[in-house]
Image (cartoon, rainbow, N blue to C red):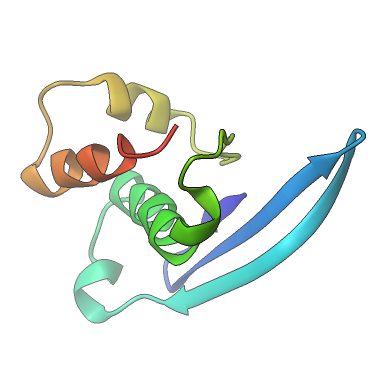
Length: 97
């Protein structure tokens, strides 16, 4: 699960066993001044990228589902024309399944 605000990002790594969710890891960080100026789509994407970088050893080779409250992320990942920063982040996410 991923969520962001104007000041910080928070992520939870979990797994589902027999239909029940179990938390493995919590992580959060405050945004620096430049990141605070991002629009909401960029902040949400930053949160997802942060979670993938933070949990990379757990995620490589595993199938996963990202839970976020920002519906435009699906559109952004499929979109071919975006800001260079967003394109770099999408390319980073394509490393995972």
